[in-house]
Length: 366
Picture 1 (cartoon, rainbow, N blue to C red):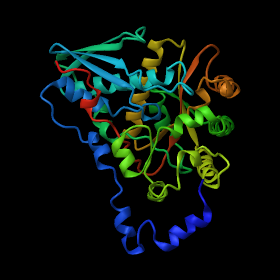
Picture 2 (picture 1 turned 30 degrees about the vertical axis):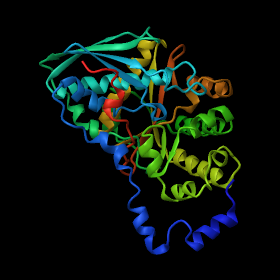
Picture 3 (picture 1 turned 45 degrees about the vertical axis):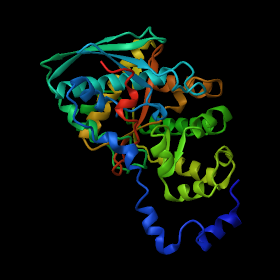
Picture 4 (picture 1 turned 60 degrees about the vertical axis):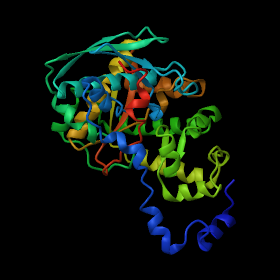
């Protein structure tokens, strides 16, 4: 538990870093090793080249739930890594399949930019086997969206009051359903805030996130996945043992309450939302939703807009049942499934998130 007196003593006495050296500490906290995959290496094998971009796809809790098998000289099989799951908040793996769909779409776009057509066959019934395979055929065409893969990042900061123009809305409606009505936006804000607090106050769901928190440079570089917290103050507290998982699990702790207020303020800054729905909820639907999500992300990146998933209300566990039902009442036609709910707006420049190197995601060498 964080002791306020001890904390103040550390700040005033320089136990963590001397004041003269604080600036040096702060400027060396970037986890360069964990961010290296955002500078893809050249590969002779076009499959590896495309996959080095695919690993940058958005995915829930940054679990990076993909494994790739190289087959022969021109084929890849994509598997779901069953060691990377969210049993509390994603018990049916729906969100993980959306992340896998985003991975597939990024691979296809990168292959096209490299002059190859990645011909994808989905194998969505294979929960215990590959979820898709692709054959790389020379002659693919480059999609303009592929130019944004390295620029795409989730923007988890507060957005400005500037709303999207009618022209921007018209363009993006080709990729997702946009919500701009002020009354509906206000209801969705309330929904996202309640859902976030429910997740925070449901111990198994909160523990799932806490166990995936990587605080500071050393933890992020050692495990470049999960929920990164790149705040130097949090890192100093972690290094001195003042910020442990027990503290993070205490929802009534002043630090946690401050975090929640900041998150609520971020949610309250949202002026517009985007929604991706499907008529049914098969594995194919979930993979397709992920592919649509990736294209939406890349288009908004091209347009200089921020996107941030806020899908807590879509999680399928008992404590969230009321908010899940309301989300579908507000956001989907009868019988449809809401696959993604996203904040949309103008915000500051987002930062890259850590990734495991490609080599750690390949099951074999052809």
